[in-house]
Length: 609
Ligand code: AGP
Image 1 (cartoon, rainbow, N blue to C red):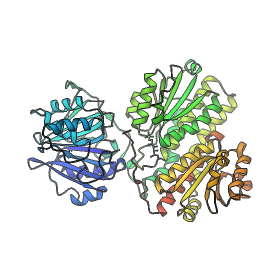
Image 2: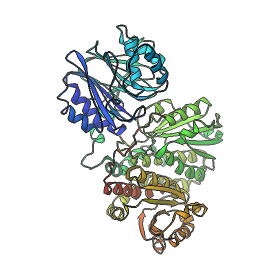
Image 3: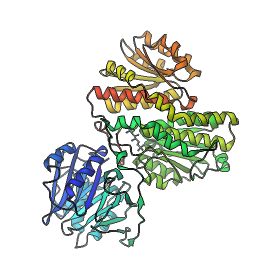
Image 4: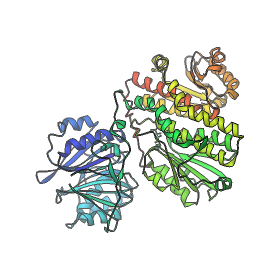
């Protein structure tokens, strides 16, 4: 969702804020703005549209002198994108300027309350209520006003605040929305995400719910919700600046697609030692695993699609009942959980609102929770009983690619670890799978070598209105992700179906020229897929088959186009078949002239419900 950044130091604030916002633009990009303490007052510049518009208005920051300020890039929730609804939002008397990520759920009630007391509102946002309340409760002490406001607002928030009366301070507070404080030499920062400030500092502190930070040029003070001073240890961020930059690629998405072999290596290698799976500090003993009656996998979007693959892997290797749930459904459907349930939570960002709520529900019901997360120290990572990190580095493109691949790798590691502890497989079979897992990075490298074939295929079909992805078993799970990728960035309508369901309805959509992408890597179900391909061809469909070399000749008898991926263990095949389909989505979107890294209406980190 929205991105916020704040700066206090010796440099001019506006260029630093714009630089930070550029790196946060993936979180929201329908409007942006900054507020700076300038010549004794708060000056606000904001505009609807991409950050370039603001950059132009500010002439790269030179138009707004001052060394203390806050900035925002917005993904609209309350009020359409417009200049007036952009952040920073200010209070009636101009004392406070506020940037916000999250949703103030009771804003209407609070707004009515203040309106009755003569406060004039100008925007449709929930955020304005925070700025107005701060001024309303302010009696000369900003910290006390923040305390009063956070006591009254319900919902989620990460807030950056400046006050005209305190020209040498930036205030920050958060609840259920991410916010970090960066500690530099003679300068301090706030940001939604560490990538915004990586070029200035890698020393950070993470605010916990309702903790308040007061930033001054040479120090940062922290307070608990009752305003008692607290100490917070600083941590060093491992990500480097280059990993959050395009590094010569036209788009982050292509960079991240190409980074997958290396990300897989970093995620897998440290966890395979002496022919065994070693899972960091995860507490899952043989006794605990034996006691498990059920495993749930809960996530959203691409991370949910990892769960779809995991179901096949876990059931095959462990013969344990697995349920895979979309987090927004799980959290409200009163799932049946107890201490014999393991809930695996998957999230790249570690901040997705529904996924976080699902984690909390699982813990409330006494289930054991294990999170697979990419962002170190994120809320989900902090709150789960155990965490396994995907070492993918920062993923900036809104469309997830390397997070998906590394999440899959971690899922395989967990399934194989449990099989190892339970001695659920003959040693040679387990050993064979571990060797396949070790080879995944090298196989991914090989698979990504041939981009041209996919690029050419995309050039033939990027104008299509609809496409269908079909598969069975793990190939169906990969179809779900392939279809999401395509629709997300190219806006081509696409659906994923289990091939066996075609005859139950979707086949009525097949007509002359309909494009069907058939993933058929599963040997066991290959003949069934061939029959499904024949059925759609008989209705005029054009078929691209994704398969492995030894099945290629047979597939060629029916498919119009085909692409071969390297063979690995059956349950790991989605790690291969997704790669050409990520490329296909990328090239189709690129040929259509879409904004690949920032697709319309989407934001990278969905921190509101
Ligand atoms: C993936 O391409 C999407 N941008 C989206 O579906 C994403 O996977 C989903 O919002 C979940 O995010 P998370 O992994 O950070 O929880």
